[in-house]
Image (cartoon, rainbow, N blue to C red; front, side):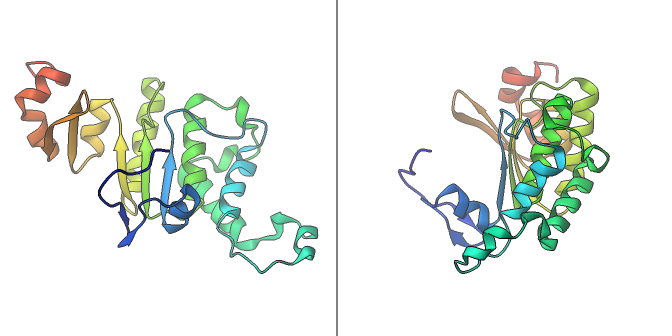
Length: 200
């Protein structure tokens, strides 16, 4: 992570500039990465439960806590089940993460994020490496999530972007060339030249 050189990062009205990743996550930011970041030897359920467990209230130090099975947490189990259902993976709960398809692994990463009860989702190229059918399924999932979560999406699949976005910012070589509604950005000559083709 690089420290901020200027400005502020506000999340839920709270200045989170310089906070640790786990503190920002507890404040309500859920993040998925360009490269899938899951526990391959674990089942789908175990991956999501680990994320859900991170939201259990922090208890005062008690050595007997270590003797209690983590899976007894009813709240974590409920978050896990809800995230699996929302991500469309309830029927794959017992599959080993390493054996499921690339698209399902991306869904799993999002399910892990959802299990932390985020208010804001930061998703880095969630459609990367997907075929058409998997991409369509991911877009449908993101449209469902959009109803109840603020979402910041970094993505190069322009069809998906225009389907999902309410507001677009287009960058070339680190510079913003257009920002606005999907319709306005689609009609922008600089965007057409850079990404869409002159006849878009």
